[in-house]
Every structure is written in C-alpha cells, then in structure tokens.
Length: 207
Image (cartoon, rainbow, N blue to C red):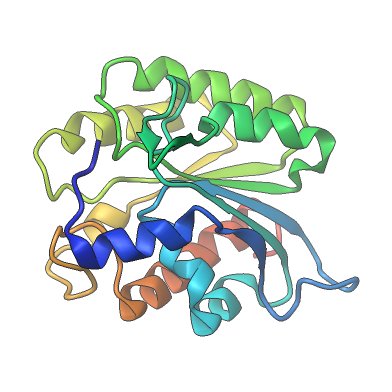
C-alpha cells in the first residue's frame, strides 16, 4: 500500500468521493463516452476544473477514482472502507462502460499477477463494447513499480485495442508531485489530463 504524508492524505481522503463527470462537453452533444478507473494517484483530476476540462472537453467522462484500489486482488482497506477493484468497477458498468476505458491502477499492489489481471480487465472491457483502452504506466518513484510497467507494455503486444500511455517517461524530472513523488499537485493533475487526452481521442477513433 502506498504510504502517504499528510498533504497526500488530504488528497486521497477527497478521492474517496471522486466519482463524477469531467469536461465541459460532458453533455448531450458529447462525441464519445469515457470511463476513467483509477486509484488515489490520478484522483487530483477530479478536483481541478482546469484538468477536467483539458481531459473531457467534447467528451462525456466518468471519473471512478478510489483510494487503495487494486487491479483484481481485493483492494486494501482505508479508514474503514474498501474500494472495488478495477475489474469490479469495469464489470459494474456493463454496456454503459462507454467507448474508451482509462486504467491507472497499480500503486497499491505487487507486480505478481498484474499481467493476468490486465487480461481479465481487457476481456471484461471488450465484452462490454469499449472501442479502446488507455493504460497508464506507473511513475517509478519506487523500483518495485518497474515490473508492473513491464507487464503493462507487454500487454500491448497481446491486445490490439490497448494503448500504453507512458506517464513514467513523460513525467520524469517534472515538479508535478507531492512529497511522496506519486500524488499530484494541481499542476500535475493538469499535466496528466493533458497528457492523456490525445490517447483517449485516438482510442475513440476521433483522431
């Protein structure tokens, strides 16, 4: 489980409630629907109007970002509650999952089993009609996350609809993070949203 200093803890407490819509275009005229399933690391997007607009303009984006979420293994408890896993979240939306799924999960678990977990999530998402999946690499602030990123990159060889968004490479050397090196400042939330948007548009067939 990611251990958080007080500043990060404030963010993840808010993330317990981070299920909502993003983007000025999240209305009847939206051109594609997107579900973002993540843990507390990307949750800052939900509390930045600028970040939500950068990611969701012209799209209908659902943010499902939960503290201590894991991919398929039971999520870790936090303050008396336990989040659904990424797989459970994906399955819960059924055909309403949308055109594109974004997955940013893995900071709260070991790499063991992550490869097979990706396959389970991909099968569920494709069965529910998604056009594409954007899978975000972990920021390697800790060496343990490297093996997870290897599994994510390898999955793109098995699943044609999967696009790897290499946040680890994109964020290297940037001052977008709180003291733990993982959770995002407002500038980091904006940067992640802007980084993901082109991937989402391509996955939806809009670019």
